[in-house]
Amino acid sequence: MYDEDYKCKIIISMADLDNKIINQIYLRNVPPPYETFQHVTFLEFMASWIKPERYLELGCRSGTSLIPISKYCKSVIGVDMNPPSYNVPPNAKIEVCATDSYFENTDDTIEYDMVFIDADHSYEQSLKDFMNVKDRVIEDGFVFMHDTYPYDIWMTSEDWSGTTWKAAKWIKNNLGNEWEVLTLPFNPGVTILKKMNIEKQLAWE
Image (cartoon, rainbow, N blue to C red; front, top):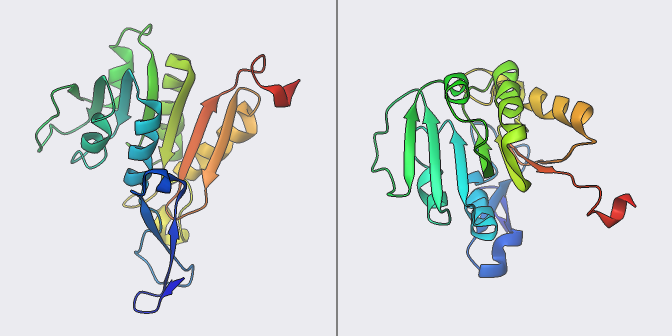
């Protein structure tokens, strides 16, 4: 159905299993800066399903996604250049540093069930963040990347989605035999990455 006041198409996402998430997907001809996908609500739903033992968020900013997602996690680690301006959940720890510094100074045997990459939006750094974390994800773990399907060229500026979409594309083209890669085509985009286990996947027999 369509809401004529906002020129948007209303859809119910797969998360209507709990009748909780209703997303507004704007038509492509709606002028910016509208985002067409509530990524936080989607990630919260995924966390409620995954129930991470350890969740890592790179670029937590004001805690908009970290706080709701933390409800479904045993432990949470957030990494951001700025100290938190919000009440940090009791099961969370915020590392105030660059993402590179975090990985350089963290035990590389620590593994994560769920990772959200939303720090530096450049192609180079978002890809580096993924490469730094990809071998620290559990066998059935997930990585999510934000800003991988920008609405228009202007959204590829540093202030918006940047060039993270190029990182998602590179991963799909070069690591497609190791990772399942699916980009949800709703502005500004979320890419779902899941480790492959060919021995367990019937489709690969």
